[in-house]
Length: 249
Image (cartoon, rainbow, N blue to C red; front, top):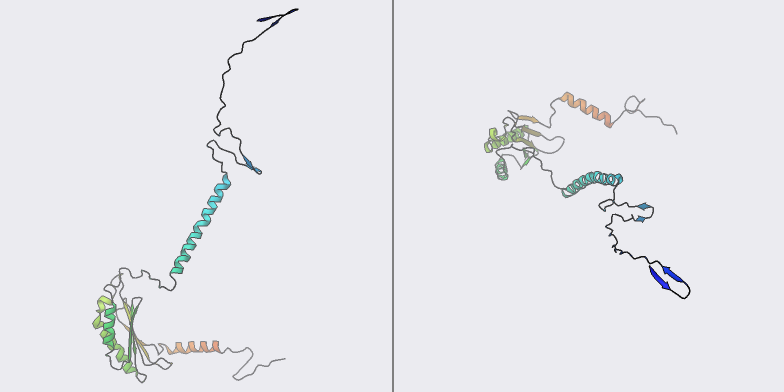
């Protein structure tokens, strides 16, 4: 208590001691108590680790994009490979572990030189495609059946002398070997003579026939009649040849 003495009255004023007040520093905000910022009408709520929450729609969009991307990539890769392979032959593996021993280009060249010595042959062509050895003998136009057959038989003898038939043209179990076809012709027209000798690796004996002559004449005549009816259809209500169809204007 402190006394104040004056001329008239003695006033007393009560003084209370001031307690020590510890200064406390403001608490640091580490982001836990931050209020979410709003942008427009939508607010991004913060999670405990500070990252934004993602609802099911986000994952649905990601999955949808992946589903669309997979077939798109497959189609794109296929189109790219097809574009690069345009004009190139497709080489498969049809004859893996087959065709042993193989017929090389040098062997074909030597065979062609031997075939050119056949009497009456004007031109010889030898080719090997899809495991089939094909021989073409072009004969003069005046060649008859006897000459055409003789040239084909001579070509087969030369072929078998160059390549052992048991090794090159005979299959063993599941192992396939080469087939061969020998074509002999005098001209390429409707009246030409075309003779063929062909043998696959599964055949024990070669087949010989004229492709220019039908195996069954009856079947040939029947097929020709069917073709003729298609090319010249008969109109309904018209009988006999040369009949005219009346027309009205």
